[in-house]
Image (cartoon, rainbow over all chains, first blue to last red; front, side):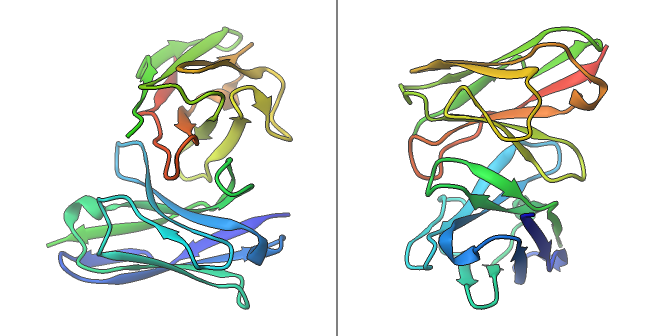
Length: 119
Length: 107
């Protein structure tokens, strides 16, 4: 079955960097667009980034553009999120998710990894 | 940007109740609307896609309706495992916004 497992979260100082990983299994990773979504404490779901199946096209909301970089290694069935210049408002649980059909729906999600940004 | 507004923000209900959550888009999104269930510490779960199509494995007590700007998620008879927060999401545009969520709590 489809499995997504995030790792790399932790406590980091304001202005610092962190790299999240998502290990995928149970499906042909290279066939699917993938996403990072986050949920800040007590808040709703928010897009962080989105990447095409081959990695060519990447999308970011304004809130993280220029600070975060999404990437993937299809040979390793892995998705990554490099987060730089972290701010307190980036504190959240970060989920990776599979996009079933290039923008139609996020049909499988991981359990998330917590990132805490504090001075 | 297309904004998504859910109502209510929270509701209290009992096991066996029929529950309806509303989601409104700031402009027409045809049927490009999904619903997710989120529980603390668990992977979010896709319930409904394309406004009314039940995701495989999701119980039939969940149903979705609507098109254009107004959508609903209905839980036909609430079960204990359904107490959670529900989000709509428009997929009409890339990075489609989520609603702010509706928390279904025990009455």
